[in-house]
Image (tube, rainbow, N blue to C red; front, side, top):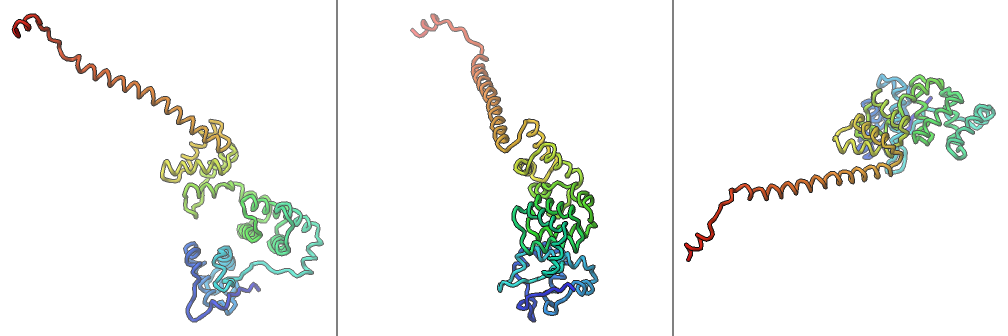
Length: 319
């Protein structure tokens, strides 16, 4: 049975909530996650199980596991002043040395470990071997699906096996059991989509619509741009409009693509050329305006009718 233990020095008559949890994590937790966390703080010494918590709140066991994974991923909450774990939970079984040796005798497991080492670029540690066995044995992922899982996670900068396990559990809950199903689940959203949404200032919990995904796919696949160029377009979009707009960012990126921009230095050169052209256009206009002002000033005096004077008569009068 999957046991959950709580560090005993957090249990007392008064309910103690770690400050780090309040500051960084409680505001991100949903109702069920908060209720389960407080329940564990109050009843941790009784070592509740996933099943008992599910029965208490009338939740499914998957809901409870998701909540526990949420708190496990918030590592800042996982430590108190004494250095102990606040919540200790693992949804996977432990494997004995004999069981690991039995798995290692299977050709496909040996292939999985070799693939994992290739992706990680280093030898796999014993605890990571256990993670691979859990995904292979408990979740029932085939060799091809585990390979795709590793490729997907590492390309999305999820390089720890804890993160890889979390993604594997999400796929399992979504009904993914084959390579085709995994590709169908992940291929529609480019890996840069999350970074684009953050750069434009969209709320973290907002899911992109298909038209927005199509924009990002165009930038990455057709234009071949990475986040260095896409991020610059997003920053200029927010600066110019004061709001997130993939359409406006698309206009910027299309212009850069048409101008054969391939790297950030090309954007700088394009900006400098734009400013030089603006200066050339403004100088003749300023000179023309200055000449017009001179002509207008001279014309003021020419508008008066010139008088004809008889200078000889004036001299006689003066004499």
